Length: 399
Image 1 (cartoon, rainbow, N blue to C red):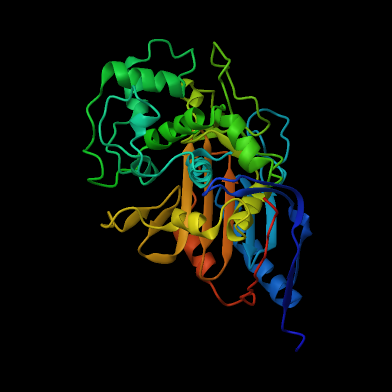
Image 2: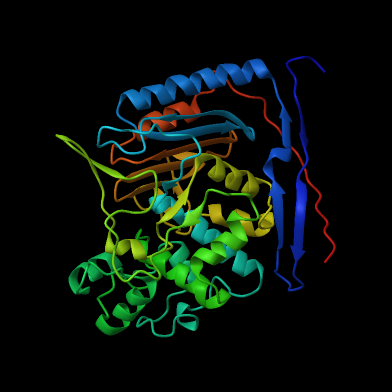
């Protein structure tokens, strides 16, 4: 084999294996991700890393303040941090690549994963009526799958809360949202399964389904079933569950900022941050990379279940867009699945080019817009391309 060729050795250190006996129940693994060893053509890696450095520095010059990671063929090619944790005041701490940011709507892919884990455990079905788990919901005919695919036709909970929540100094929670829906019965956007309508209420309700099915708080379920098994040590769900008053700012080193003409302003905490599932997860670029690798290697779910996350949920592509289970799709980029997040001073980007086996993760703590055209151009550039890899794993734990 020539020097420019490559080989890959994939060794997963299984520290803990727990298998259930139900028909759809999956195994849970605690994995040391450092045990993933890849030896590829180092010259190609260096050239692609140089491409990434040019790309990310251009984003930083345009005003991006955040952390980023680029991976190809399972290998982290480039990661860096540009800017500061807080953009106001005289003392400014530089961002670090292991800083955690709020993922905003990128949290949805993790909420969907929690639902798929419960499905794999035989504890729910995608076509179950949501009223099976939330009987007080005042709408008929909505399934778990409709929520996952944004086809429920439900109204926006933030608009409802803005109109009816009496004291915004108190957190608005998932349970308060459900209670308000039952009492107010706001008009639906559409009947179930009629059209794709991206709406945060769908994933907020999915978090409540997770709680009621599992008997755990949503933040605890996510920790026990996703973050801890994958070694995502810097990831968590921000919770105001026990708070009676909304704090002035979120308790995190990396504050979100709104960018005004006269300069940045730190975003204050918001009463809607009490709602989980559609947002409010914090993570780092490295933790997200661990999660994406785990999806590719089927460490949380078998491929027969995991792959459905990337199946378009609507027969008709609305404005060229579609949605799987927590992942967006666009007809102009058929080999790409992605999600963008934007909430209260944070923006985030998670993109997977499945054909080229590339991952792009960008986490920022400002409202500065990131050019999607630049993202697609960088991801599709094959001037310097790493050799494709393939591997198989055989994990046969004893039940």
